[in-house]
Amino acid sequence: MQPIIHSLLDNDLYKFTMWQAMLHRHPQTQAEYRFVCRHEPGYPLSELEQEIGEQLDHLCSLRFRPDELKYLRGLRYIKTDFVDFLRIFQFQREFIHVRISGDTLEIIANGPQVHVMAFEIYVLAMVNELYFRRFDADQALACGRQRLTDKLELLDRFDNEAPRTHPFEFFDFGVRRRYSGAWQREVVTTLKREASRYFKGTSNVLLARDLDLIPIGTMAHEYLQTYQALGVRLRDFQKAALESWVQEYRGDLGVALTDVVGMDAFLADFDLYFAKLFDGLRHDSGDPIVWGEKALAHYEKLRINPHTKRLTFSDGLDIPRALALYRHFADRTQLGFGIGTNLTNDVGLKTLHIVMKLTHCNGQPVAKLSDSPGKTICDDHTFLAYLRQVFNVPAPAV
Image: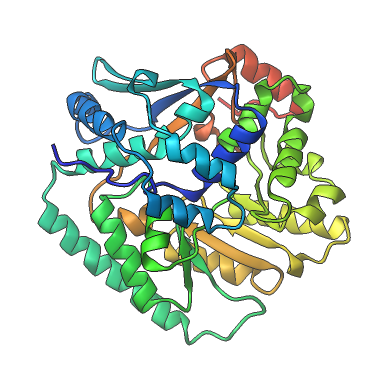
Protein backbone atom coordinates (compact mmCIF):
# COMPACT_ATOMS: atom_id res chain seq x y z
CA MET A 1 0.00 0.00 0.00
CA GLN A 2 1.45 3.32 -1.13
CA PRO A 3 -0.03 6.05 1.10
CA ILE A 4 -1.50 9.01 -0.76
CA ILE A 5 -1.83 11.38 2.20
CA HIS A 6 1.39 11.84 4.16
CA SER A 7 0.54 15.06 6.00
CA LEU A 8 -2.74 16.42 7.37
CA LEU A 9 -1.72 19.83 6.00
CA ASP A 10 -2.30 18.36 2.52
CA ASN A 11 -5.75 19.93 2.45
CA ASP A 12 -7.54 23.05 1.23
CA LEU A 13 -7.22 26.11 3.45
CA TYR A 14 -10.97 26.63 3.58
CA LYS A 15 -11.40 23.28 5.31
CA PHE A 16 -9.36 24.68 8.20
CA THR A 17 -11.13 28.05 8.27
CA MET A 18 -14.61 26.47 8.24
CA TRP A 19 -13.44 23.88 10.77
CA GLN A 20 -12.35 26.60 13.19
CA ALA A 21 -15.63 28.49 12.79
CA MET A 22 -17.68 25.35 13.45
CA LEU A 23 -15.57 24.37 16.46
CA HIS A 24 -16.03 27.80 18.02
CA ARG A 25 -19.70 28.33 17.21
CA HIS A 26 -21.47 25.00 16.67
CA PRO A 27 -19.28 22.18 18.00
CA GLN A 28 -22.28 20.00 18.84
CA THR A 29 -23.51 19.74 15.21
CA GLN A 30 -23.92 16.25 13.76
CA ALA A 31 -23.34 15.94 10.01
CA GLU A 32 -23.37 13.54 7.09
CA TYR A 33 -21.21 13.84 3.96
CA ARG A 34 -21.64 11.66 0.87
CA PHE A 35 -19.32 10.94 -2.03
CA VAL A 36 -20.82 11.34 -5.51
CA CYS A 37 -19.40 10.76 -8.99
CA ARG A 38 -21.35 12.96 -11.41
CA HIS A 39 -20.53 11.06 -14.60
CA GLU A 40 -19.60 7.62 -15.92
CA PRO A 41 -15.93 6.86 -15.14
CA GLY A 42 -13.58 4.90 -17.37
CA TYR A 43 -14.01 1.85 -15.16
CA PRO A 44 -16.27 1.21 -12.14
CA LEU A 45 -15.10 3.06 -9.04
CA SER A 46 -16.39 0.10 -7.03
CA GLU A 47 -13.13 -1.62 -7.97
CA LEU A 48 -11.33 0.80 -5.65
CA GLU A 49 -13.28 -0.21 -2.52
CA GLN A 50 -10.51 -2.16 -0.80
CA GLU A 51 -7.77 0.34 -1.67
CA ILE A 52 -9.87 3.25 -0.42
CA GLY A 53 -10.40 1.41 2.84
CA GLU A 54 -6.66 0.91 3.24
CA GLN A 55 -5.97 4.58 2.52
CA LEU A 56 -8.57 5.63 5.08
CA ASP A 57 -6.99 3.32 7.66
CA HIS A 58 -3.70 5.12 7.03
CA LEU A 59 -5.31 8.57 7.15
CA CYS A 60 -6.80 7.73 10.56
CA SER A 61 -3.32 6.95 11.86
CA LEU A 62 -1.99 10.44 11.10
CA ARG A 63 -1.67 13.33 13.54
CA PHE A 64 -0.68 16.95 13.08
CA ARG A 65 3.05 17.29 13.66
CA PRO A 66 4.63 20.07 15.75
CA ASP A 67 6.06 21.85 12.68
CA GLU A 68 2.64 21.76 11.01
CA LEU A 69 0.93 23.21 14.07
CA LYS A 70 3.57 25.92 14.24
CA TYR A 71 2.82 26.91 10.64
CA LEU A 72 -0.92 27.08 11.27
CA ARG A 73 -0.38 29.13 14.41
CA GLY A 74 1.54 31.64 12.29
CA LEU A 75 -1.55 32.41 10.19
CA ARG A 76 -3.05 35.42 11.95
CA TYR A 77 -6.67 34.29 11.52
CA ILE A 78 -6.04 30.84 13.06
CA LYS A 79 -6.78 30.92 16.77
CA THR A 80 -4.59 29.33 19.43
CA ASP A 81 -7.37 27.17 20.84
CA PHE A 82 -8.08 25.72 17.39
CA VAL A 83 -4.41 24.76 17.06
CA ASP A 84 -4.66 23.16 20.50
CA PHE A 85 -7.66 21.16 19.25
CA LEU A 86 -5.71 20.03 16.18
CA ARG A 87 -2.82 18.97 18.41
CA ILE A 88 -4.99 16.22 19.91
CA PHE A 89 -7.17 15.60 16.83
CA GLN A 90 -7.19 12.24 15.06
CA PHE A 91 -9.66 10.96 12.46
CA GLN A 92 -11.90 8.17 13.76
CA ARG A 93 -12.33 5.29 11.31
CA GLU A 94 -15.76 4.48 12.73
CA PHE A 95 -17.09 7.78 11.36
CA ILE A 96 -16.47 6.93 7.67
CA HIS A 97 -17.80 3.95 5.74
CA VAL A 98 -16.94 2.57 2.30
CA ARG A 99 -19.19 0.15 0.47
CA ILE A 100 -20.32 -0.71 -3.04
CA SER A 101 -23.76 -0.83 -4.62
CA GLY A 102 -23.42 -2.55 -7.96
CA ASP A 103 -20.71 -0.59 -9.78
CA THR A 104 -21.20 2.47 -7.57
CA LEU A 105 -18.68 3.39 -4.89
CA GLU A 106 -20.37 4.74 -1.77
CA ILE A 107 -18.39 6.69 0.84
CA ILE A 108 -20.32 8.19 3.75
CA ALA A 109 -18.88 10.18 6.66
CA ASN A 110 -21.29 10.53 9.55
CA GLY A 111 -20.69 11.88 13.05
CA PRO A 112 -19.84 15.11 14.88
CA GLN A 113 -19.20 17.71 12.19
CA VAL A 114 -15.90 18.81 13.73
CA HIS A 115 -14.73 15.19 13.41
CA VAL A 116 -16.00 14.39 9.90
CA MET A 117 -15.95 17.63 7.90
CA ALA A 118 -12.23 17.40 7.10
CA PHE A 119 -12.53 13.97 5.43
CA GLU A 120 -13.78 15.49 2.16
CA ILE A 121 -10.63 16.66 0.38
CA TYR A 122 -8.54 13.70 1.49
CA VAL A 123 -11.18 11.27 0.17
CA LEU A 124 -11.40 13.03 -3.19
CA ALA A 125 -7.61 13.11 -3.55
CA MET A 126 -7.46 9.39 -2.69
CA VAL A 127 -10.11 8.37 -5.20
CA ASN A 128 -8.48 10.42 -7.96
CA GLU A 129 -4.97 9.16 -7.39
CA LEU A 130 -6.01 5.51 -7.05
CA TYR A 131 -8.16 5.78 -10.16
CA PHE A 132 -5.37 7.23 -12.32
CA ARG A 133 -2.73 4.77 -11.10
CA ARG A 134 -4.26 2.26 -13.51
CA PHE A 135 -3.32 4.36 -16.55
CA ASP A 136 0.08 4.81 -18.20
CA ALA A 137 1.91 7.21 -15.88
CA ASP A 138 4.82 8.00 -18.21
CA GLN A 139 2.48 8.99 -21.01
CA ALA A 140 0.26 11.04 -18.71
CA LEU A 141 3.15 12.95 -17.14
CA ALA A 142 4.75 13.65 -20.53
CA CYS A 143 1.44 15.05 -21.76
CA GLY A 144 0.96 17.03 -18.54
CA ARG A 145 4.41 18.63 -18.79
CA GLN A 146 3.85 19.62 -22.40
CA ARG A 147 0.47 21.15 -21.56
CA LEU A 148 2.00 23.00 -18.63
CA THR A 149 4.64 24.40 -21.01
CA ASP A 150 1.83 25.50 -23.34
CA LYS A 151 0.15 27.34 -20.46
CA LEU A 152 3.37 29.16 -19.63
CA GLU A 153 3.81 30.15 -23.28
CA LEU A 154 0.24 31.50 -23.30
CA LEU A 155 1.06 33.63 -20.25
CA ASP A 156 4.24 34.84 -21.99
CA ARG A 157 2.15 36.02 -24.95
CA PHE A 158 -0.28 37.69 -22.56
CA ASP A 159 2.67 39.80 -21.35
CA ASN A 160 2.43 41.75 -24.61
CA GLU A 161 -1.13 42.94 -24.00
CA ALA A 162 -1.73 46.50 -22.88
CA PRO A 163 -2.00 46.80 -19.09
CA ARG A 164 -5.42 47.18 -17.53
CA THR A 165 -6.58 48.85 -14.35
CA HIS A 166 -6.21 45.74 -12.19
CA PRO A 167 -3.63 42.92 -12.52
CA PHE A 168 -4.25 39.35 -13.64
CA GLU A 169 -3.80 36.95 -10.71
CA PHE A 170 -4.56 33.25 -10.53
CA PHE A 171 -4.27 30.53 -7.88
CA ASP A 172 -4.09 26.75 -7.66
CA PHE A 173 -7.38 25.27 -6.41
CA GLY A 174 -6.60 21.71 -7.50
CA VAL A 175 -6.21 19.46 -4.44
CA ARG A 176 -9.49 17.59 -4.83
CA ARG A 177 -9.17 16.82 -8.54
CA ARG A 178 -5.41 16.33 -8.89
CA TYR A 179 -3.81 13.55 -10.89
CA SER A 180 -1.55 12.88 -7.92
CA GLY A 181 0.00 14.68 -4.98
CA ALA A 182 3.44 14.55 -6.60
CA TRP A 183 2.09 16.06 -9.83
CA GLN A 184 0.36 18.90 -8.00
CA ARG A 185 3.64 19.70 -6.26
CA GLU A 186 5.48 19.73 -9.60
CA VAL A 187 2.87 21.98 -11.22
CA VAL A 188 2.79 24.47 -8.36
CA THR A 189 6.59 24.53 -8.11
CA THR A 190 6.86 25.21 -11.83
CA LEU A 191 4.24 27.97 -11.74
CA LYS A 192 5.98 29.68 -8.84
CA ARG A 193 9.31 29.55 -10.68
CA GLU A 194 8.13 30.44 -14.18
CA ALA A 195 4.96 32.54 -13.71
CA SER A 196 5.29 34.30 -10.37
CA ARG A 197 4.14 37.60 -11.94
CA TYR A 198 0.65 36.07 -12.26
CA PHE A 199 0.62 33.00 -10.00
CA LYS A 200 -0.14 34.20 -6.46
CA GLY A 201 -0.89 31.21 -4.27
CA THR A 202 -2.45 27.81 -3.66
CA SER A 203 -5.32 26.41 -1.63
CA ASN A 204 -3.07 23.51 -0.58
CA VAL A 205 -1.80 24.41 2.89
CA LEU A 206 1.09 21.92 2.73
CA LEU A 207 2.38 23.31 -0.56
CA ALA A 208 1.88 26.89 0.64
CA ARG A 209 4.12 26.13 3.60
CA ASP A 210 6.74 24.13 1.72
CA LEU A 211 7.00 26.52 -1.25
CA ASP A 212 6.55 29.80 0.66
CA LEU A 213 3.30 30.68 -1.10
CA ILE A 214 0.18 32.41 0.19
CA PRO A 215 -2.51 29.89 1.26
CA ILE A 216 -5.77 30.86 -0.45
CA GLY A 217 -9.33 30.18 0.70
CA THR A 218 -12.26 31.34 2.81
CA MET A 219 -15.54 29.37 2.86
CA ALA A 220 -17.29 26.64 0.87
CA HIS A 221 -20.92 25.62 0.39
CA GLU A 222 -20.97 23.32 3.42
CA TYR A 223 -20.43 26.26 5.76
CA LEU A 224 -23.52 28.13 4.59
CA GLN A 225 -25.56 24.94 4.15
CA THR A 226 -24.94 24.00 7.79
CA TYR A 227 -26.89 27.08 8.85
CA GLN A 228 -29.99 25.68 7.15
CA ALA A 229 -30.21 23.24 10.06
CA LEU A 230 -29.06 25.28 13.05
CA GLY A 231 -32.43 26.54 14.24
CA VAL A 232 -32.45 29.94 12.53
CA ARG A 233 -35.41 30.76 10.28
CA LEU A 234 -34.60 29.17 6.91
CA ARG A 235 -35.08 32.47 5.10
CA ASP A 236 -32.32 33.95 7.27
CA PHE A 237 -29.71 31.18 7.07
CA GLN A 238 -27.40 33.06 4.67
CA LYS A 239 -27.41 36.21 6.79
CA ALA A 240 -26.77 34.14 9.92
CA ALA A 241 -23.84 32.34 8.27
CA LEU A 242 -22.29 35.57 6.95
CA GLU A 243 -22.72 37.32 10.31
CA SER A 244 -21.08 34.42 12.12
CA TRP A 245 -18.16 34.49 9.66
CA VAL A 246 -17.66 38.21 10.19
CA GLN A 247 -17.62 37.75 13.95
CA GLU A 248 -15.16 34.85 13.69
CA TYR A 249 -12.64 36.48 11.33
CA ARG A 250 -13.24 40.21 11.87
CA GLY A 251 -11.91 41.40 8.52
CA ASP A 252 -9.80 38.46 7.41
CA LEU A 253 -10.92 35.92 4.80
CA GLY A 254 -13.44 38.34 3.35
CA VAL A 255 -14.65 36.65 0.16
CA ALA A 256 -18.25 35.36 0.33
CA LEU A 257 -19.57 32.42 -1.69
CA THR A 258 -22.75 33.32 -3.55
CA ASP A 259 -24.41 30.25 -5.05
CA VAL A 260 -25.85 28.14 -2.22
CA VAL A 261 -29.35 29.26 -3.25
CA GLY A 262 -28.37 31.17 -6.38
CA MET A 263 -26.92 34.60 -7.03
CA ASP A 264 -30.22 36.50 -7.01
CA ALA A 265 -31.24 35.11 -3.60
CA PHE A 266 -27.75 35.79 -2.27
CA LEU A 267 -27.76 39.43 -3.35
CA ALA A 268 -31.15 39.91 -1.69
CA ASP A 269 -29.39 39.12 1.61
CA PHE A 270 -26.07 40.81 0.83
CA ASP A 271 -27.06 44.27 1.97
CA LEU A 272 -24.91 47.37 2.57
CA TYR A 273 -23.71 46.01 5.89
CA PHE A 274 -22.29 42.81 4.43
CA ALA A 275 -21.14 44.48 1.20
CA LYS A 276 -18.94 46.81 3.24
CA LEU A 277 -17.65 44.09 5.57
CA PHE A 278 -16.71 41.53 2.89
CA ASP A 279 -13.86 42.18 0.46
CA GLY A 280 -15.60 40.48 -2.43
CA LEU A 281 -17.52 37.54 -3.85
CA ARG A 282 -16.70 34.10 -5.31
CA HIS A 283 -18.34 32.61 -8.39
CA ASP A 284 -18.77 28.82 -8.54
CA SER A 285 -21.72 28.13 -10.85
CA GLY A 286 -23.77 29.63 -13.66
CA ASP A 287 -22.66 32.02 -16.40
CA PRO A 288 -19.65 33.92 -15.02
CA ILE A 289 -20.26 37.02 -17.14
CA VAL A 290 -23.89 37.28 -16.01
CA TRP A 291 -22.80 36.67 -12.41
CA GLY A 292 -20.07 39.32 -12.56
CA GLU A 293 -22.37 41.91 -14.07
CA LYS A 294 -24.93 41.28 -11.33
CA ALA A 295 -22.24 41.65 -8.67
CA LEU A 296 -20.97 44.96 -10.08
CA ALA A 297 -24.50 46.30 -10.50
CA HIS A 298 -25.22 45.41 -6.88
CA TYR A 299 -22.16 47.28 -5.62
CA GLU A 300 -23.06 50.30 -7.72
CA LYS A 301 -26.64 50.19 -6.42
CA LEU A 302 -25.23 50.31 -2.89
CA ARG A 303 -22.91 53.18 -3.94
CA ILE A 304 -19.80 51.11 -3.24
CA ASN A 305 -16.85 51.65 -5.55
CA PRO A 306 -16.33 48.29 -7.35
CA HIS A 307 -12.61 49.03 -7.63
CA THR A 308 -12.36 48.46 -3.87
CA LYS A 309 -13.85 44.95 -4.16
CA ARG A 310 -12.71 41.65 -5.68
CA LEU A 311 -14.55 39.11 -7.81
CA THR A 312 -13.03 35.62 -7.62
CA PHE A 313 -13.92 33.04 -10.28
CA SER A 314 -13.49 29.33 -9.57
CA ASP A 315 -15.89 27.30 -11.71
CA GLY A 316 -14.26 24.95 -14.23
CA LEU A 317 -11.64 27.46 -15.31
CA ASP A 318 -8.62 27.09 -17.53
CA ILE A 319 -6.06 29.76 -18.41
CA PRO A 320 -7.77 30.92 -21.64
CA ARG A 321 -11.16 31.25 -19.94
CA ALA A 322 -9.62 33.09 -17.01
CA LEU A 323 -7.90 35.52 -19.37
CA ALA A 324 -11.18 36.10 -21.25
CA LEU A 325 -12.96 36.93 -17.98
CA TYR A 326 -10.07 39.15 -16.99
CA ARG A 327 -10.32 41.13 -20.22
CA HIS A 328 -14.05 41.61 -19.65
CA PHE A 329 -13.84 42.86 -16.03
CA ALA A 330 -10.28 44.05 -15.33
CA ASP A 331 -10.93 47.76 -15.86
CA ARG A 332 -13.87 47.73 -13.47
CA THR A 333 -12.91 45.71 -10.38
CA GLN A 334 -10.19 43.61 -8.74
CA LEU A 335 -10.11 39.98 -9.88
CA GLY A 336 -8.81 36.56 -8.89
CA PHE A 337 -9.02 33.18 -10.63
CA GLY A 338 -8.92 29.85 -8.83
CA ILE A 339 -8.04 27.09 -11.31
CA GLY A 340 -8.30 23.46 -10.24
CA THR A 341 -8.57 20.46 -12.55
CA ASN A 342 -7.01 22.24 -15.53
CA LEU A 343 -3.84 22.86 -13.54
CA THR A 344 -3.43 19.68 -11.52
CA ASN A 345 -5.07 17.06 -13.74
CA ASP A 346 -4.53 18.21 -17.32
CA VAL A 347 -2.58 15.13 -18.42
CA GLY A 348 -4.56 13.91 -21.42
CA LEU A 349 -6.85 11.58 -19.49
CA LYS A 350 -10.59 11.98 -18.97
CA THR A 351 -10.96 13.45 -15.50
CA LEU A 352 -13.34 12.36 -12.78
CA HIS A 353 -16.12 14.74 -11.75
CA ILE A 354 -16.36 13.74 -8.10
CA VAL A 355 -17.54 15.58 -5.01
CA MET A 356 -18.18 14.78 -1.36
CA LYS A 357 -20.96 17.01 -0.15
CA LEU A 358 -22.78 17.77 3.07
CA THR A 359 -26.27 16.20 2.86
CA HIS A 360 -27.63 16.33 6.43
CA CYS A 361 -27.06 18.30 9.63
CA ASN A 362 -28.61 17.38 12.97
CA GLY A 363 -30.81 14.85 11.18
CA GLN A 364 -32.21 17.44 8.75
CA PRO A 365 -31.54 17.64 5.00
CA VAL A 366 -29.53 20.54 3.65
CA ALA A 367 -29.15 21.54 0.02
CA LYS A 368 -27.49 23.74 -2.54
CA LEU A 369 -29.67 25.32 -5.25
CA SER A 370 -26.83 25.93 -7.66
CA ASP A 371 -26.98 28.33 -10.59
CA SER A 372 -25.79 25.27 -12.56
CA PRO A 373 -28.65 22.75 -12.10
CA GLY A 374 -26.35 19.72 -12.42
CA LYS A 375 -24.56 20.79 -9.24
CA THR A 376 -27.67 20.63 -7.04
CA ILE A 377 -27.24 17.85 -4.47
CA CYS A 378 -30.11 16.75 -2.25
CA ASP A 379 -32.15 13.55 -2.25
CA ASP A 380 -34.99 15.07 -0.21
CA HIS A 381 -37.29 16.52 -2.85
CA THR A 382 -39.69 17.94 -0.27
CA PHE A 383 -36.93 20.02 1.31
CA LEU A 384 -35.69 21.13 -2.12
CA ALA A 385 -39.18 22.30 -3.04
CA TYR A 386 -39.51 24.14 0.28
CA LEU A 387 -36.10 25.80 -0.16
CA ARG A 388 -37.08 26.94 -3.67
CA GLN A 389 -40.34 28.36 -2.34
CA VAL A 390 -38.70 30.24 0.53
CA PHE A 391 -36.11 31.88 -1.75
CA ASN A 392 -38.36 32.16 -4.80
CA VAL A 393 -36.05 30.03 -6.94
CA PRO A 394 -37.86 28.42 -9.88
CA ALA A 395 -37.34 24.73 -10.55
CA PRO A 396 -35.09 24.03 -13.56
CA ALA A 397 -36.81 23.19 -16.81
CA VAL A 398 -37.13 19.45 -17.42
